[in-house]
Image 1 (cartoon, rainbow, N blue to C red):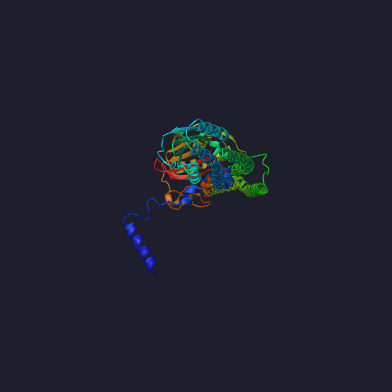
Image 2 (image 1 turned 60 degrees about the vertical axis):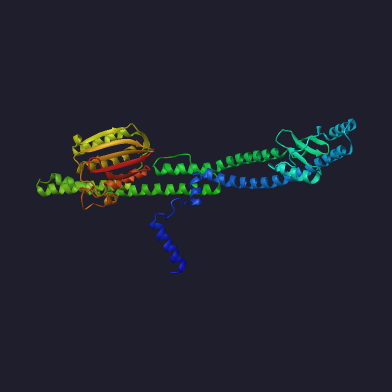
Length: 468
């Protein structure tokens, strides 16, 4: 290790010892900028267009305006200084009297500067204190062009500069029009720059909005497809790259739908072919003499039929059912009633905290999803509660029981197809390990999911959440 590395390591240990490492107020400017950036593509694209325009116009305006303002002001001020120098020469050449007053008024009329002579007064200051660009320019020009001491005030009058020049016998006061010493169109230039920028930004925003709309439509179509909802009238639109992405999405959707349909038809055919000999076996056993072996065989056949049905449900998922507006409260009540009748557990299942919620879903598929959770809860719990409520932008269906539950580190295993838990609670006892897998597949086909949590009843809580 080098000396610098050793010193750096020692510094880090000392800083950590005293609680100052890493720095408490350390921040990354790029991370701050990232947080301030808009989230939507339209906003970010608009910044890409607007930011260079603003920076460029700011630099051009600052450089051009400052240079233009200085040059024009200096040129105009020199002209005023020459005029004032001529008037001062007249004043110094003539003695006090009517002739001097007459010459002063003639010069003031010719140059357009209202003039006034203040006999016997003295200037209290020689030059003005520079405050603005105009003050600095006037100070420089008047001090270099007018030999006599002079002072001016640019703040007293809006349209005039109050200029005073020290003469041998008094003070000459001139009101110089402001437009004679500075460019009057500078503000108009800035307003034109800002106005043209706003027009260009508005035009760019309209064109950019038209380019972003096809991406938003594609995103909505993908979201509806992910939720298992049908959508019509979607066509590739926009720029060539967006059209290619939309065409690829449509082709992908067709392949997925074709694959799901083929898988469902194949498994349905297999199920039908296997059920046919099972039916013949059941009929043959029905006409045979009843004995324990016959009863056992009938149980095996029933279990095989149940397994086939679970296989088919898992492969079919939500099937070809069309999504429609559904009252989830009614759906939950029907699922609870069916589960209570199937397991003879009407008195053990309760509906609590049911909120009226309408959502576009595949009703039968979602009912099967909730039914699988209820079947597991009834098997391992003596008390089952079902709740339906909104949670922000989600709708949640919660199934609680007071059974043995599942350890937190093994809850994700319960969703694996054909997988059984060896310890604690076996959620698929008597089945093939597809109950929760089918339920999660249906929930995800609606754009949601299922999560397992600790139940307030002491057992397991299974929550189906769906986006609103």
